[in-house]
Image 1 (tube, rainbow, N blue to C red):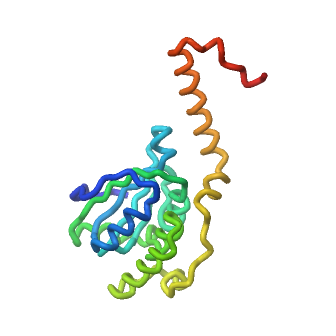
Image 2 (tube, rainbow, N blue to C red; image 1 turned 90 degrees about the horizontal axis):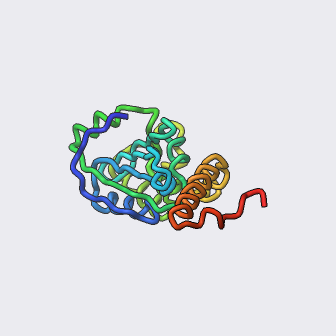
Image 3 (cartoon, rainbow, N blue to C red; image 1 turned 60 degrees about the vertical axis):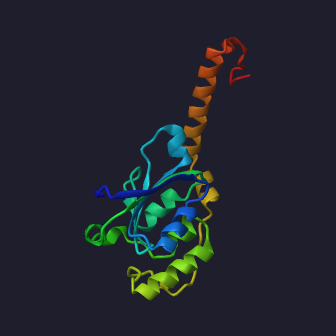
Length: 194
């Protein structure tokens, strides 16, 4: 997904990305948010999520690490926080060009439900989408009508991904061993086999 640079309007570390989604909705912002979850920050990985917005309503989702878009990208982003979130404002013309990618489209309330775990924000987002005439993608009638689709628990989703957990453990182990060597405690560490 090729993004125009846009005007940076907000850059924060938040415990839940719903904070940034609510701000975009309240400010009726048109542009995109780059979301970088804690695990990417810890592992120095290039795994970011992109959510585009039109008048504060989410339209597209994409995940750089998995190269998946749409609803699948939301599943990749549904991990425990904190998140580093950068919000960029774009012109309507730039957003129109981005939004001409149907396979990346998400139902308006789904990012708030799946990534932020905030049903109230999801309902507010759906209401704004209806008032603006922003139609949900085909097959998302349940979301557009306000009926909640089965919500995935972000923590449960994260815990089911053994590969990510193993990578975090390995990174922590390497950092602990490096610090122990720096502090002269290398001989004091217990071997994992003990």
